[in-house]
Image (cartoon, rainbow, N blue to C red):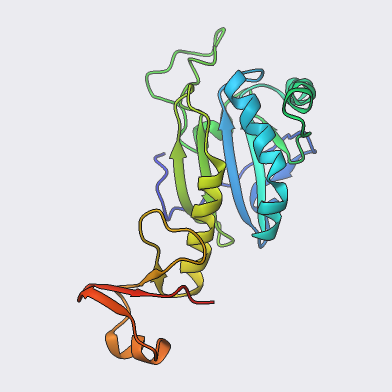
Length: 218
């Protein structure tokens, strides 16, 4: 299957470093970040897992549960986590899915169709298992990012996108380029001027009729 924004995130049951989970039940009413790795004991991924563990408080503030995935089994993940704690200074504090049969990777359309078969697979064979999926409490996919193996993911950007999506889900606004929390936003095109006057009685800046800029709503 091809997974696109707005689709229901595929549900699954899988072994993790914190026990077996059912993904949708585990998410409950929370937002979720699922991010994947092509192999255990890979250098870039080691730094990423440490960074996400260090950001746990930021994800908690946003009602976000984080879960990782790598194509190796859980017992390998647990050994890898020792290296992550040692080299990154933060122990992994979220579950890591064991996906040696690539069941979840296939469900989430992460396997390149031209990838080689199962025998002696390397990280390069799994190179496209480098994705970030943001899932809403409604279990819909809100964001998909896929990174090359040689480029570490920017989880500050993931947090920024989370802030934008959570804000725009609550208010009828959109966020402009490079937006950060607290900066001006754009009134959504679905909002008429009459409706906007009720919500924003102090008015807005409008360099063009279709571009209505207003302070971020609380």
